[in-house]
Amino acid sequence: MNQAVTHPSADPVFRASRRHALGLLLALLFLNASLSFMAVWPTILVKPDWLLAPEFILLVAALSVWLAWRGQRPVPNAAGWLAGFYLVMVVAHYADVVVPNVLGREINLYWDAPQLPRFIWVTAKGNPWWVSALAIVAVGLLVWVLHRLFRVAFSALLTGLQPVARKVWWWLLVLPLCGVVFANYAGVEITFKVLCKPVLPTYAREAQRLWYAFSPEGAAKLLPPTTVVNAAMDEPKGTPLATLNHRDVMVMFLETYGAMLYDQPDASAAVQGSREKLQQAIRAGGRDVVSAFYTSPTVGGGSDLAHMSLLSGIDLNLKQPRRFDVFMTQNRPTLISLFKREGYQTFGLYHSVFWDWIERSVYGYDTYVDGPALGYKGPAFGYWKIPDQFAIARFQQMYPIHKDTPPRFIFFPTISTHFPFCQVPPYQPDWQRVLGPHPFDDEAVAKAQAEPVQWQNFRPDYLRTINYEHTWLAGFFQKPDKRPMVYILLGDHQPVGSVTHGEVSWDVPVFIVSDDEKLLDRFRAAGFSNGLTPAHRKSLGEMNALTGVLLKAFGPN
Image 1 (cartoon, rainbow, N blue to C red):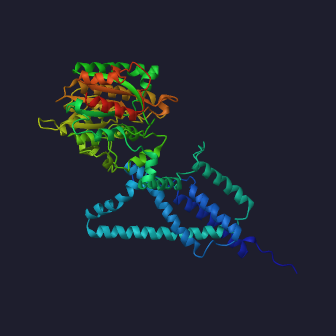
Image 2 (image 1 turned 180 degrees about the vertical axis):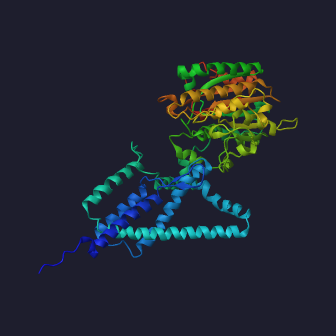
Image 3 (image 1 turned 90 degrees about the horizontal axis):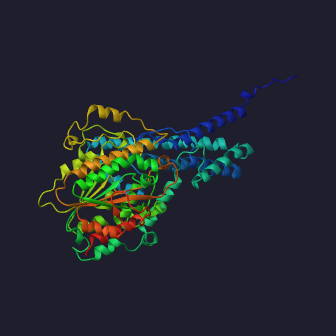
């Protein structure tokens, strides 16, 4: 008697196997997506990014090894423990991708962790109690829901991995992916992008940064015990800046203003006309200018490295990023500290900053002025909104100089020449109009705002921004100062390779502008030459060496 043939789909074992395979697939997709999302710029929202999450790949590999060896779940309630661990990883990844949107830089636990309680407290104070209570409940509910979902997903993952953990085909898939992850951790560039931003390297660096920050021994290994600024602070009050004779000082870092503007013939020719007009304007205003090349601690970006190398007298080089990280956790004296001690009122003018820049406490300005504080009502240009011309004009309007105004030290990083160099602002010859509600002609605004980013060829727009910088500076120097001021203008770094079209030196020009010829003679004795074009192409040293040159020139006879 023939037995009835049973269809495979009716077999309970087959159905269970198919259900486990489907559960494994869904768990893999969900858990990977939970750790590979990306931020929606410039918000705190996120969206899926269907690349592979490095840490999830390693976790799957580790679980597969255990199941292949033991043939069972790692420990009782393994899914619950894994869900808790994964939740922490997801929160860490969220912070890692969202913080750059909010603060304009990578996450930094030294600075960011202490701000979280303050942020929560300030937010709570500004709302009725029931709003805070509702927010706490909502966050708690979200954490509970995510943990439950992760627990279900890991349960399905563990169940689905058991029958495949010893299969050769499975390891032929998993092992190459692990190799790609470790290559990514090691910094190997892969032409085809398959991985999202990893979590562990970021927090490994943060742990190392915190160790250096809170370890005197670690900091001592990275930073010099003393600097030229320390030596100046040790001198009697009134001595270190004696030659200045209480003149105001403005340090103006010219964004992305590199030596390629001199070294590359086509770039030099493109900006030569506006540079000559700037030099003429400086001299027509009763001042003179000397120049030289120095070597920036960075290239293509990282302006803070250049800013603080000059202010501190320490080489905070891009090639040793931990030095800057650790410096920013130390209470080291800077030029700002010195000028404050000598009776100067210190200002930081950062019109590109629209977020709560907490690291400004290291700089220690008496008065910090960011973008919102300027109250700009005119049209926005590019990513950075406020033109340099308006920023300096508005600053002078907000903080006029009177007879009893103490001497000033002003630190002003420009921004209109910043990457990606689009929407170059028009120049307004009427400096009073630039402060009004209609600072530019409508036609000029429409033309500038219609400019697209030239992602394939940045160079022409970059050179246009430099011409704009020369033009507004020429207009600025044509105006007389309320009282004598010394200007230190210098580039922060060379532009990115897509602008320079190849490797370049890290050199930047430095200009000293003053009506005091005896002071300028001191810079000439240090290797500076007349005009905006240095006579000698050779760099006079690293940017932190310029700190010592400035202090020597400003010091006693």
